[in-house]
Amino acid sequence: MKKWFILTGIIALIFIGGYFALSFYAVKFIKAKFQNVREPGLTVAEIKIKPTYLSAKGIEYRDPHSKRRIFQIEEMSIYPEIFSSLKGSLRIREWAIRQPSFFFSRSREGVFVDPWMGKEKEGKGKEISQAEKKEEPIHIRIDRIRIEKGSSDFEDMKPERTPANIQLRDLNLEIDDIQFPFVSSHSSIQFKGKIKGKAKDGKIHMKGWIDIKTMDMAISLEAQEIDVKIFEPYYQKRVSAEIESGYINMESKIAVEKRMIDAPGHLELVDLRIKEGGGTVLWIPAKTLVSLLRDKGNRIKVEFHVKGNMDNPQFNLQETFFTRIAISLAEALGIPIKVVGGDVVKDTGKGAEGLMEGVKSLEELFKRKKEERR
Image (cartoon, rainbow, N blue to C red; front, side, top):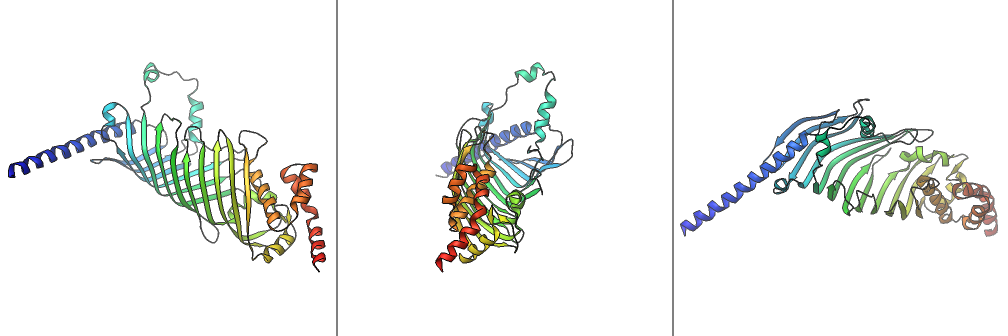
């Protein structure tokens, strides 16, 4: 009996040793591939080989031209599938990215700043060596990418009057089954985070699937207590009154297929405070809106449904969204937009322009409505 016990122990040690040996080999294989990435502006403070994973710390990338920081990562751990490296491919069980910070920006012309796009242009006209032509990209499959406690800052210069600055914090993301070169497949995705506001932070939660190659998706979105003021640069053109404060709760099912978006949902405005005076809010007279919101406890829910072809130059996602919200808001407040707006949209124009002309007479309509009640 004692001999069998010793034999079993020896076999177990062989298997454990073999596992660690193969894992160590797989990790070394990944390290070699990782070190081959020689991007100008990319720095890594430390790379260590652990028995079952590769650890990298202090990763940072800066645009080589502007020296602007694009991202930094506190720590990254890559856990390989032990036998994949023996086949010449690479399979990663999990890619954990801890405390990353990402920095995005968009120019006045609406172009997202992407340092890699410039490199592609610079590479044109250069001769490619025979070795580079023959070398085929390694096939990589990642079972799961996990981001923990990340942050993202988006500086948008496109709004005409004031640049926007959207700050996301405490980001946690999980996305499964990613292959490179990209293939068309449904990768499950789950995202949670906070969006910084003036007084307090709001919460965002997304869940569903995304096709990395085609960017088709089906995602459910929930947002709670999002500060209205952080979106002021986007609605300034549509709001001439001064919004002092307020919060948004929103739920939507977002589907994108072949660049066609279909996104029904509802939005709730909570504690919307508008400074006394004239002006309009989404083409609705501010005085009328304040009065009606007061009657409803300063809390109102509106439905919306955004549909369109994102490749169509005449389709503007932002404009369509605000127009649908404006029409739904008018309907929810009891403004006869179906009667007035329906005729206006047909006779004078489409979307926001028609709505803008239609709301000019809304105050008069409500005066008559109140007089009839008396």
